[in-house]
Length: 375
Image (cartoon, rainbow, N blue to C red; front, side, top):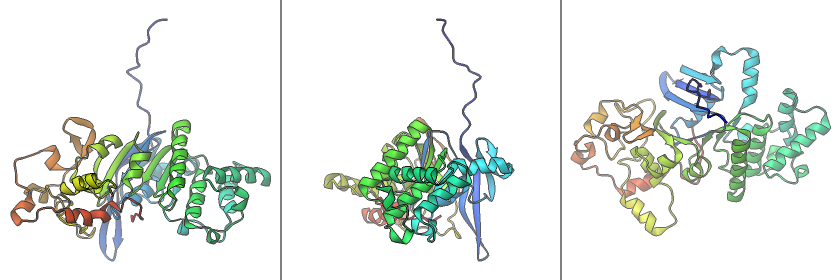
């Protein structure tokens, strides 16, 4: 057979969701709070993007922009190349069906006056995916079985107040799967589940990604979960509304470049005493205090807490740039991308990083065992 050559004119696949310079500013009591600033991210079919960072870093607000639950103050959000703000009613309906959001808090996201069956049946009927009571019951049973709520007859008639937190969360996940979405946005969707159920659910979501081509935006404080679920995908680290490091998960976890990413990894509990001692000996943050969004530091917003901060960090705002020698990993840190023989800013004042501060920064990682994110 004749040899075939690759088509150099082939266009790259259009992402399912793309954020292009998206920003979200909240106006609270006469003040502007920049929850998300100039974020550019994309997720394609079968891809997984993990957003990590401490509470208040803007992860949930970014996810809400991608889900169309909020409109960006500036910038653009596109679904398959189409600006959400320019969609027709039919296009918007298709987008709503294709992109589903699994909320963090099942106590607030589930309607207390609807049974589990009603919660799962409404979207099926609204989008014409099931007709008749028998077909709806069959589909509801399939969804409950998928999320390990078995036997399904024991749960379909229950109301949210009759279930545990973990059971409610599984119902929330099942609701996200009702419309066979193309993109799932999961906001701490496994934080309230038992470990065995958590792993089972993540394996099920991974199967959807690999076999059905479902894309994922996965938000978590637990870097161990990020490593497990997004090992073949990408991880973006957020701090005070900005992306400070992004790249393949394997590189971000195994070879972190930004001091903030390193601090998050140092805060992950280590069961091995020898490895835990090695991590503590590596130092930590200068301060555990998180700046207020209403009074952000000048220059690099991380410099008051950074053990590597230099004088230029107080004056210049870093931008995402490729890490030297790693073209697929970007970092917003001048000390990393443009190293200079300048003494760290904290050295002159004697504010050397201590391992105690690293321990205090456990909250910066949102405790790797879970915890709620705040937009």
